[in-house]
Length: 432
Ligand code: URA
Image (cartoon, rainbow, N blue to C red):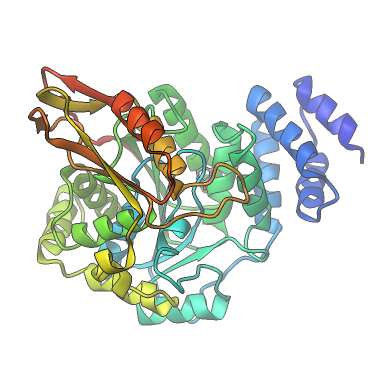
């Protein structure tokens, strides 16, 4: 096959055959197709989309690029969750322990940060020693002993997505419905979970900027799931505002730990409660969402699911003491406190811009090769809708990079003080 012919077809909106799609994915995985060629292919997909048949072949080729798991020898039920990515989104770190507390094992494959958004694997790596690159035997062992295990893609597990994800991140091809749908669903379909919940973010901090696009992505992923006989539910959630107060890797793990002790911010609390409750309903542990939410709220208030986070991080080699004794382990050379210039109600011009600011502070990658600074990030002393008096701290920037003037100016540009509070629930809709 010839790449020039294939890219020409895609560019000219002609449908590719399954053989052509499989050839592209396989050639990229085995390095015969170069990054620049795959980047061109992704960009053509970004502009022209994919037909249902193309998407089915693409997703299947991604799954077949590596091994799949059977979970034999581990007693279920099994649940999986994935988010399309947002700013401050540490939901999985809270959701997984909550669901495990109810006897449902969370067997999950996660990704790294992409664009302005953070990734679960990067966050967990804040705990020195933690690794998501574990064998199938280790994955099963942790599931059996703790009830939660999170793997990252490796050269064995959906390697096509691992390579593609990194390339899309730096070539402006993240926000494409077929590329996101295949990326997420390939990672969900290699593990045989009984239920899958997808958190599709919508708003300025998300890849889907409009509710219509978010619904289309949701439908696309539900359809892929259905074709594999999977029970998929989708939450559409607001990402016009960052989620919670912490943005940046270790800061977010700490916020997850606090939330599991009933001390989380209201929006994060709401989303984690609903996501866990949906899983409990999907797995028939409760008949109604309301009953399930009440039960989850009780667990959160009692702090009785927190130990699952600590145990799972420790079981995968991580030093969880670093989160418990946060200030000892995560210090930055600079802490810039941004103060309110007037009184009123806080809002931010864009959640994405907060994500990018956090990335520039060292918490994310601008290029594939960048190393993450786990201590870097932003803490929102005041978040959207909260009242602030003149001179009070709105946010604190943590960084080891010497660029104060620029960082402070960027942060100040992001702050808006309104006369009335912006309110709204984080969960917009449940599609099931
Ligand atoms: N999350 C993923 O796993 N893949 C994407 O493409 C976007 C978000």
